[in-house]
Every structure is written in structure tokens, then in C-alpha cells.
Image (cartoon, rainbow, N blue to C red; front, side):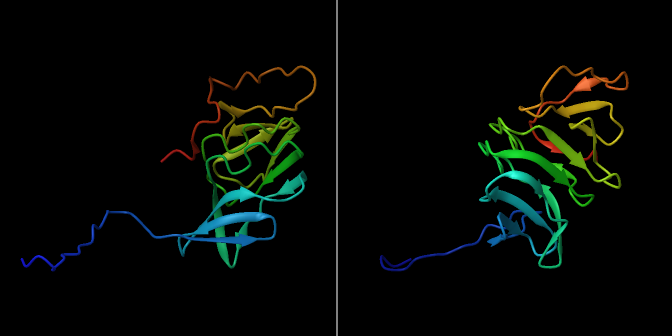
Length: 153
């Protein structure tokens, strides 16, 4: 190779799909072309409903730290299309009092504002702003924490 020649290559990673970042109402998101991940929130807070689709594509994920530090957030409604929630998605949301999950959601459910897996055997997250005491249901066999929440394979 001569001194002024360059070789360019491309590394193909199996399963990798390029994404496009965009904004829809108060939601920042990335699209893979077949599904959407919510990556951020720029709205005023209060009660927030995650859209079930954006630009005709299903919203299947809430990304890691997507709502991080949204202290004005009080309630989050999760549609049936969302099957994964990233690490720390709702961390630092001191005003968050309740999760509400669409009853047709195949991965998650809610009871008295607390987020569970669909069968309510894993307590996924208790909202930081929940007031009063809470008794964990007898169906719960483990407490998951807000690491990476995804539907079982």
C-alpha cells in the first residue's frame, strides 16, 4: 500500500439495527424502522400516558433513564405495546405516585399503583412518591428493582 492510500472497512454486528432519533410531542424516541423506544421526556410532568405507537410503529420499549429526574411526574400509564423498560427509566421521579398498566399488556401489570411483571410474581418498582404503607401481595416471589425490565423470553 502506498503512503497516501487508505483502507476503509465496515464491521457488521449480527442483530444490530440502525436507529433514528426524533421527537414526538413531549417524547424523545428512537426508531429501528419496526419499533420505537422512548428515550426521553421533555414535558411538564403530571399524569403522562406513553403512546402505544409513534408514526405508525409500536412503542415497545422505555429506554434506560428515559424519565430520569422528572420530579413533576405524578402518574405513568403504560400501554399494552410496551414489553421492556430500561434500567433507571423512572429513577429520581420523586413525585411519581402510581404506575397504571393496560390490562392487555403481556409483560407488565399494576396493582395499587405499583409496577409488577404480568403475573404479579415479581414486584418491579414501587413509585418513589407513593404515599402511605403498602403490603406486598402474597403472589410476589421476588423483588426485581428497576434494573432492566423485559418480558421473559
